[in-house]
Amino acid sequence: MIKITAQIGKELYKTEIKSAVNTIIADEPVEAGGKDLGFAPRELLASSLGACTAITLRMYADRKGWDLTDAKVAITFEWDAENLKSVIKRNIALFGTLDDAQRKRLLKIANSCPIHKILTNPIEIETLLGNG
Image (tube, one colour):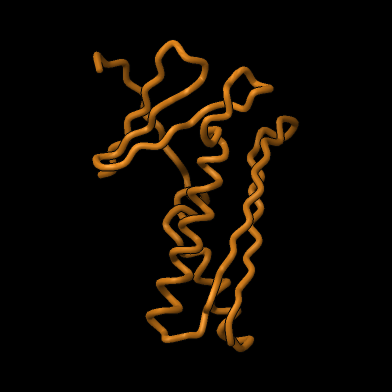
């Protein structure tokens, strides 16, 4: 089980996010009242998909011994308020000596990354009020 804590004090809107061994800062952009000290929450969500996709592609290509020299994953994330849905677009650029069959396989493998699976299946969030 993954455990993450997010803590915010009086400083608008700087939030420390911690895992067992790592810390990152999230914030809102200046135009939203923050100081832009880190990724905004929606950027963190999009970053998760981008990073997971890139890592999954690297792992698969390495396991197959394919010449994938670089993979760039660009994510756009928008909230469609009219239709009450999130729209995420992922553009993958693959570099190296890869044939068409390898490229097609890597595109399919991108959809196997754990974050892609999480975001494309039902999500249940249980919220409790605790004492820290």
